[in-house]
Length: 324
Image 1: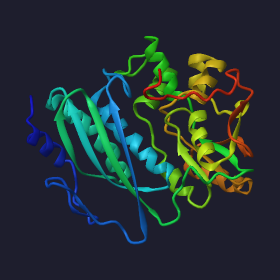
Image 2 (image 1 turned 30 degrees about the vertical axis):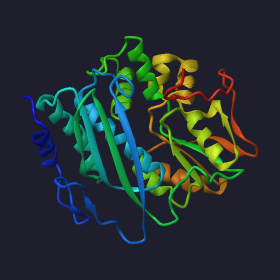
Image 3 (image 1 turned 135 degrees about the vertical axis):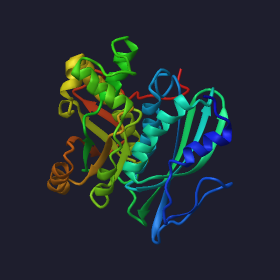
Image 4 (image 1 turned 180 degrees about the vertical axis):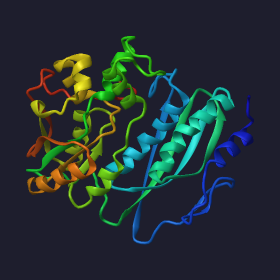
């Protein structure tokens, strides 16, 4: 069934809920929101294009989930609590058979994370999803990239490289991203690519613990490079401390798994720096969240990124749009 623009908008609007912090939601020229007192507004935007940010054949529900997840990950990296978002859709055809499962995926994550869809836009064109997400963080408590200090430990959440591993399997024709894989390791990696878990609880808990943070979207070394550049320090990563998951090692072996962990993007884990005195607190946090937090390096004087014990010679080349 083909939908016209206003039916499409109404189909999305009926999935939203009234909230006290929304004075006016979908249906007007702009939304009217009620930010809380003494909070700063964190705003981020991401665009996902078919064939660039996700395989074109991906299930609509997975596309909806991931489109929101990448924005929520940015809020998590800032220590911001999700509040509102807008959704802009470019669709070759507006069909209920695609839109409804897309909305199922998007609103499953929206409802779980407490973010409300308050507006957006629809247009005909190549498949592309743009979301602008807004969160709130107490004034002066946002996590930033420019706060790393010499002597800080460098930490990573979870198991980096798993999404990049799934992408390599797909590129090699060894993984169908549309369906559950028979191989348990492959299926675990597929889920990490198609349904990333934004580390929202961790981001909130790192307020007052971490000095600097970023989410891993372009690759761990590349994203730590952003922290190094913004903070005016050097990043030194020890490759032998990298927490490689059993699924990633089973699929690729050690060397390729390490390369995925250091340079693969799309994980949306958080990398952050904190004083050595915070190790015990971060260990307790890891236990309370049931989320591995691993020390993988140190902040030093100087500039740039160095990775010790890496066969790739520490090159930090993550994904870059427009790079030849």
